[in-house]
Image (cartoon, rainbow, N blue to C red; front, side, top):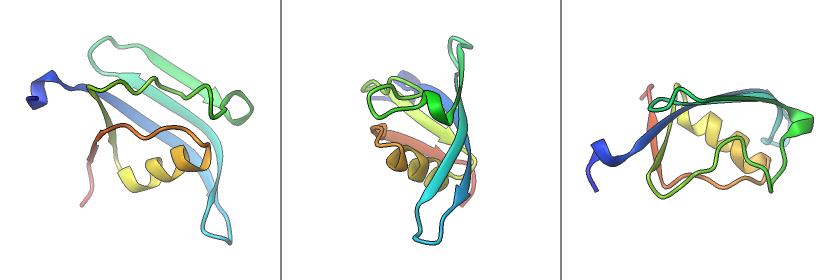
Length: 89
């Protein structure tokens, strides 16, 4: 698969770090760069069975800090996409 085949989805969550190393997710937003479709959700709308974005086999999560956004997905019990791009090193 070429990178041009991937569907970039920019994700950002707001969260509170907890003492045990986990996070309390407050809200999140995902924007599909190709379609322009944006989805915004508050914590009470997010569940493990209803992720903020349907991560298909060609989806690529794009985030300023990929590790932080992945931690939010894990905390919510949501799947991680196969591909990711972090804008910080």
